[in-house]
Image (tube, helix red, strand yellow):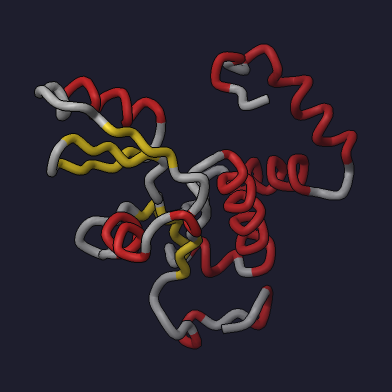
Length: 163
């Protein structure tokens, strides 16, 4: 379908481009790099609502015959509190990556259109601000990243940082 000025919406083979990465911080980093690529090389694809991010589970939770999948720690805690309150041992598994999931699990949780969660990547009204942020964070100038972080460091929630 082309890139930059040669991009043509009508040449898309499918209506969606779906980015699927691991559910951990490494996967989020890879997803952000891919989103940046599409934003810079195919902005019309993003503006047209064709770019999506799949949300695979980070955890599997089992108790007897009951199985549930959690996308993050908060969702896991909620499921344990509300859905797994009965008797019996609760088995908790953490996926290290998509490659560690059984094919049936991947299909059920991340690929089945009836059950999967897709997030559409949108550029909000502040397109100039978005471009500036992408340039600062993903551009070639490390001093721009440093300045961006310094200006916003006081707002960071340190308990959620993965250091």
